Image (cartoon, rainbow, N blue to C red; front, side):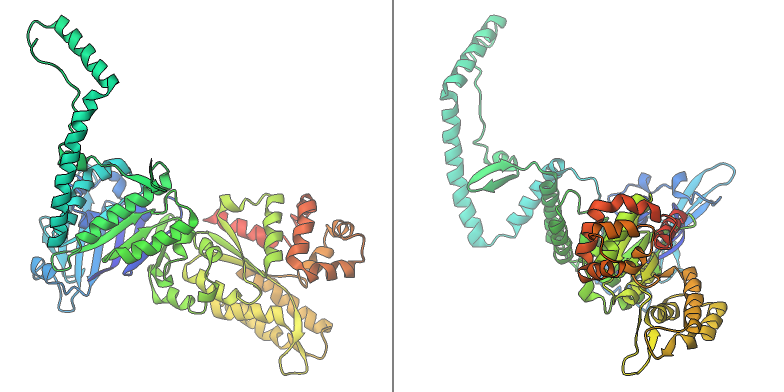
Length: 583
């Protein structure tokens, strides 16, 4: 069985949200967007570590931005076929093997008194009230929060892990352990007898006994000794600590990252040992497992948790490295829309999976980082990325503060990236070349850049009748001219459509970035940097090794970019800023 869907109405920052889940689900989103609140909603119904007191609703649990005096949490399960669940929730699972658990809270408008009720049934319209979470023995979550303390956890869980390991031994292993146990006991007794003979121990023992004889008239026949008590083998074993062994030397584990790995490994090991599909169904909820870990270790951790935990797994994270390791249709992106938290495409969905269909070969840390952005600026290639990142610092567009990512698509991937960003409901702006090229297999030319953007408009935006009419009127003039030098009628048609496309956050250059820059307020800086060549030669040199030439120029002349703040070149970057500030 699987928790397939969660609906939240009036709960904390969720006014009315539906979140579809997968067998392995990654929940991403900005700070305070509601990732922990989503997990808390699930825990209210499924975490047996929560007391009755924890279940009582608080004022802060009710939606804050409107006067609402009730909230509702519904958990929907599918493929409920496990005997343990069917027997425990007899009559509550439908013929289609579906189950709904519900938590409903109300608050009296006049007194402020709060109460809650629990329900179970085949569906949301067939719920019956239940008095307690009696199903937790067979259906539950195991939760690990973002704040983890290794030492108390090890102390609490170590004996249990040892006991589980003991029970899983073969007869041969038990006999071997018994023999070794006796040898250890003999060795420890020998240690106990030798420790008091150490000179400093013997001197300290003599000193304390002399002082005690001065203080007391009684017990004069008793001698105080320092007892190592290491011969108590069970106590000795239970007090073992975790250390790192390198080249035969044990060193205490001190790094936060390594401690975090050990904590999660112990946690996963225990829960793997307790996995028993015949007795219970467990959902694993883990918050921010990446804490203090190196990026490569974060990716390894994501794979480890997915492979090691045999139940359904929900992970919340801020890590692009972890996001890059998850299946596209397993990502839930939470974001805020008019003070309400919602899930893009309602969570895990085929929409997102389809968007990624031809994206697999491009999947990397860069687009994964974009998933955590509020706005993504799509540009042609590395030279544009270098330029706009530098320009942003010179015209006071703080990309990090505004949560804007600049993503290059290498000239061929605009449509694919737009599809993905739309499915994750991330705002985007693009800038592309206004190139004119020969139509394949034809003897005429066309405005390739403009037609490219018209295709994006048709495929990925909500079309508008006025824009449709404009394209129909001028589109016929975008192609069919015999050379790469279009006449005035073609240029006017292209300009009319280009101006209109800006309403859809698509910006075209006059020609390309290099030509636009040489025709801008920094022309003299470019000419001077490239040894006073002619404008045409400057453009040629820049286009020969675009990224390298751009880097060399920006390294020495970045301050000059400030004059471009009000130019057409900066317009798409400023639009990104405008969109980010609206969120």
